[in-house]
Amino acid sequence: MNSVKYFFYLFIFSSIVACSSVKHNNIEGYIGLYEIVKAECEIEKGAFDPCENTCFFEVLKGQFIGVNDNDLAYVFWSGYPEIDSDLQYTAHPIDSRNTKKITEKKLWLSKDKGIQEYLTFHDRVLIEYYVEYRDRGGVRKIKYTLNPVRRGGKPSFRMNYPGNK
Image (cartoon, rainbow, N blue to C red; front, side, top):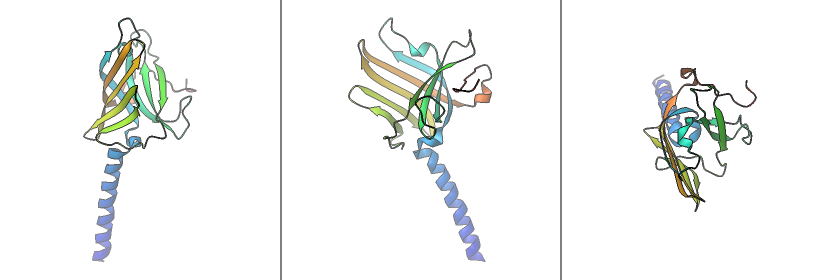
């Protein structure tokens, strides 16, 4: 009987450890909505500034044009809520060639010669989106500091998925 109890407690402990490590190493554990609490953009003067109207960042699975049902994506929700509560979205698939594994507190979304794009994690929390790339006007840098939020906690914003009205 003692061995049954021992294996039961060992199973419970192993399950807890396994569940807690999933979120730490796998981007799917961070699916959710994040409010942009600080936006920093270095862009060419007179160019479109995404820091002015991007309100939320979301990690999700499927649901958007160009994103298959089982594929992961990240979405920027933007707009001017003081004028219209309906936010617009821009969805980007997370490349399936990526390992989707978080290493050294970063998940690289793109790491090419002309672009560096990644998510940063601290204490098992997604805290930052960063991209740096070259365009005609020089180098652009965008950094969003993120805070996890519940969609129900933001009733003044309308974020409609495609097909949902």
